[in-house]
Length: 263
Length: 375
Image (tube, rainbow over the protein chains, first blue to last red):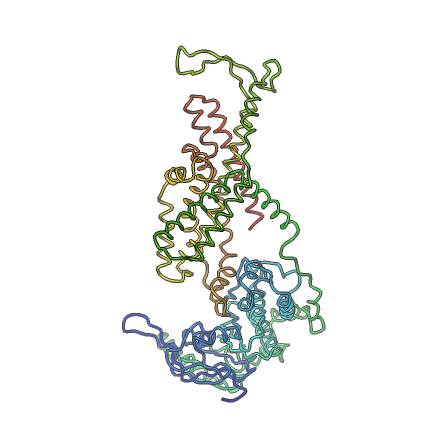
């Protein structure tokens, strides 16, 4: 294992049962390595297996065959809690607790390291409170928004809070599952810039699934394209050509179908 | 969509080519320029964090704790605890005889129970002067110097018998209202304690009855079964059994109210926990937190408004029900209501009913106000 590698997928396959004698292959023999500190963007059509790939890293799913290696350790049931503490996750729908304040939402990311009594009474340790304020300041939130409920924020602001929550425990890896799908282009760019800046500051590796190719090209250090559960492209964003995208998204086939229907 | 993904379009939206950005992008950049830059990043050090619990909260909690501790002895709950302790002690004694094994824990519990009984007995010494004082008061009534709105009335001793002897009766006007008010306060106290007991029983019931949080399948079935069981037995029946166990008084009423309504609350809590959006729960679970912490952070804040509404409803319901429980000697104003009704004193019955209405109406407004403050 190379010293600089952070996550490695080793012939990972994941199948979902969808009825008797039927199963859906979400990932099929996927192998690639993500080096430490890289901003890796995963693209691919809906249902291609992007989210499944990310959920294998934070332990929300287990591979059917193959294995995922996290910082040199194979992810197993025994070490998953330890690994989960080193992984921050940003979700498509932000997944903030809408009735909790901005500060509490960010501090909820420290939950694994805080006692149940402190969680119950919301008496968060001072150093975590300071870190939460620092992160909120970094993502452009202001002091008067600290005690506003998450439901009172706009989509972009909620995603900023979610980024702060993901970075509160200084994770080694941040997973962003379509973090800008529900945001407009301007806010999307701003959120991704914040994400990249935060990962650069903390040295975290980012695996981010995206649908917006232009954003992927703009922000990614590396692009991995998934098509029908397999890696269809793995390389720098500059080398991502129209032909590759046509292949990944089956655009040529769709254009042909559309021409036939029109005729 | 794919056309937009070509290299050309990507290049035109890159930050380097800011002149070609849309007006919206320019707006965003204007806003962005107002955000804190690197030199302002330390400004969070000056942010003022609120104290999680203010002086007002501490003061209110202290007052509530004092009032509840006074009420605890007023509604004889200390005797109820002592009786329960005695029953547990006897149960342990029975078990020790049935299974002659020296169990250290059992002996410790027994010692604690005895200690609790001694403390409870010390807390309220019997006051024989009470009865004498009442009798003295009746002897001291001066017909020419009665309290305001009181009077002496000649009426038959038994109004249902035509040849009943006629005797002078001392009619208390505000006096009777004061008595009813005291009884009503007792009733409300019973309802509050019943609700507190109900909430404490419903929290574990709700947790185990929620499909998403119960640890095992059998605990789910057990929890749901317990909720149904306590709901299907009518409160009057529970109160009758408890009056036999604990004797007449508010303790039986409180326990009956608590047991019965915990079934409702447990079911409501469990249903709400199950219906909470799973997204935030999954998000927190993926950070490595255990299920209790996830429940406290991702579920409790979301379901709190409904929980408070349910508890408010149960409190109102308990006040109404507590008035009826008196009919089976389980404390409260119901006993007085029943006695006056049996004697055909419908004016007194009307007074009690109006008082119950005013109490429930006032309570509804007070709880609505508190709910607004809490949520």
